[in-house]
Image (cartoon, rainbow, N blue to C red; front, side):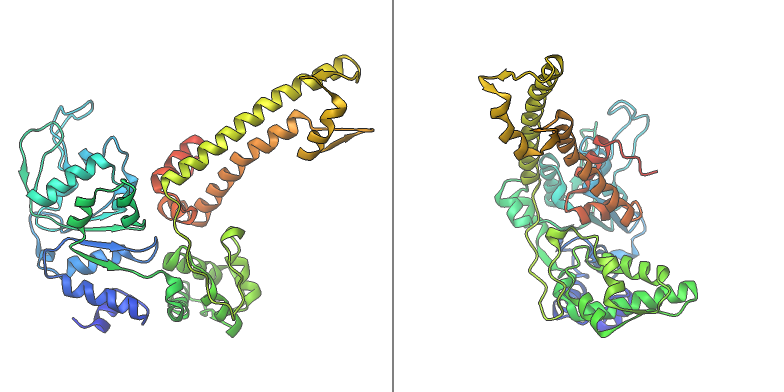
Length: 411
């Protein structure tokens, strides 16, 4: 199958050399049994390439299994992932009232697509390595190995080489998965393809809802091409559909377009100047870095809460003594004024001081802003957790934990 036919069959838009190289590698490697590692940011179409590889291999005619099985490793809780992948026997654990096949056994004879392989716990990485090397699985609660014939296509949006160096991903598993790698470029590296994709998505919406398609002015086209597109093709598709449905104007100007691009946080938004090239993407924040930041933030909040308690005592005593000057840790209220006014001054007649409520509100505001950011991401992606996590640049598992922490019910 030639590249042009392949693009038409899988509805792939674009002529970027890196994209064409990826397509060529996929079609060349499809008939083999090599394990494939697909790398690229979230939203670039890694799942489409897993279909290309499977449907152009001899495994597409599989009868005993289900052909192509897709598994999101980041969406399965760590406590159940072994059972999900390898199955379990009856009585293996509480609630296991029957024997159940895992994804690998279901895919026997076909292909299994392990998305977000970088999220796989280290303990499971060891067991996956055994599957790749020996071609056998052991269901939870069983001691009898089962022979299987499964081709593995894995994908990740994290820097897997960095994860290996930091000990978060096994080096031997990396080399076993990476018999051949396919890199999918982010949309900002395919600038010339962006208007083509916009036109395709606009036409799809127009056909679906029986309305005239939207078109970009030249300035809007340039703005679109210079936008960073951290959500890649998925983000572009969502925004195009929103504009096509919401806007009455069919000619889209930069002023209209800006209303749909401004949800990106300011610190990640480059200058949308037509002459300026899009900036290089920053490295993604690792879970370890997020944890360190969270610990640092927690320590700061605890220190602020300690100061809040001291200030509460000060305010209570001031109320009791009718504004009498008090000594706190050897300092007078006058000496504390500069510290208070530096934080957040509150004027009461001729004195300035910080009330505990103001400081506590600032501390709680950090959590509130994070909660609002999660809600905005979920709303923008119509409740799709995977896409929301990608927009927030956190793992899907971290997003689940935050939803529970903030008691966010998407329903």
